[in-house]
Length: 197
Image 1 (tube, helix red, strand yellow):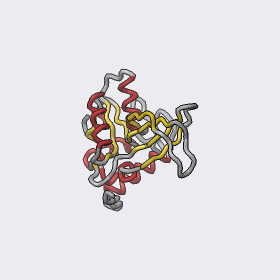
Image 2 (image 1 turned 30 degrees about the horizontal axis):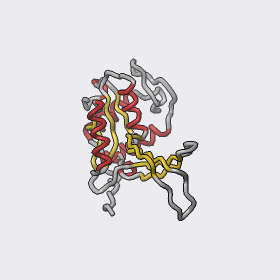
Image 3 (image 1 turned 90 degrees about the horizontal axis):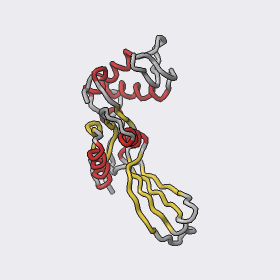
Image 4 (image 1 turned 60 degrees about the vertical axis):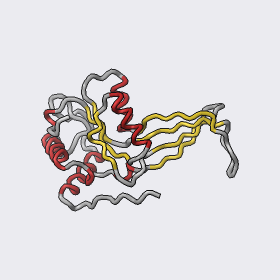
């Protein structure tokens, strides 16, 4: 994908990247008791990555990329291998040394299918605007500025003609843009990666 937003074709999915580890258990135990794990499955997850995978699985023929962060571990290797298998561009995925790739352990009761989830934010909690690529960020910020509403707010979506296509203003988009601008100006320190335990 090109760094120039207006010359790109395709979709860049940004957000949480993680591994879902499903564990079918015989029954949920009482505190301080034991449950037997009968089956384990591993899949990709997180809204950013799910969108990219879903688009590809639905047969999208256009370029698809993902933007986010992983650690340097087996979960990261699994995510990157799945993306490669599906033809999803991972140039926007940062590997954060010393971080653990985000994951969710989902305990699923065999009878009834009730789920209890345990989540570790990992690398996702450490990925912010200050860890990105400044050249690409500048191009995206310039594109955003060129596609504001007449009142200057940022829409959630822009149609093919480059006009706002949905809700404006969108506080989340505005907040992320502000964080990116602060990081670009050096007013936002990079969040340090804690040492691995």
